[in-house]
Amino acid sequence: MILYHFTARESLHGIGRYGLTVGDVSTDFKNFLGRVGVRLTDMSTADDHGLVGSRNDKTRIRLSVEVADDSPLLHKWTEWANSNCTAETLKWLH
Image (cartoon, rainbow, N blue to C red):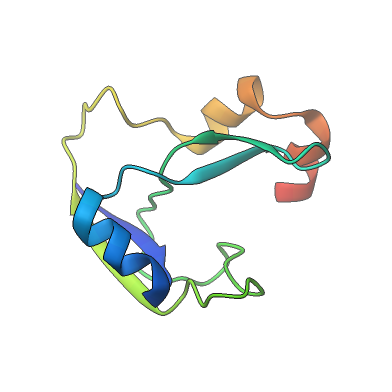
């Protein structure tokens, strides 16, 4: 399947050098905690992903990634977040 990753121009050097291997998935906004992970989506546009407002424009670059449907490295956000994020963070993200 094809998934997409949106990023800022400033991140392309690191992605080119190391691949899509490092990212931050917020799990607790109050305490500034998260997990290492890369956000992918099946949506081909950057709309409604909460990417607007950061100092680097993460809507500017879209990367396409081909991933096996049964990859054990993929986790559906709505399922993963329920057991990995604080209730306050989940409420804020929704």
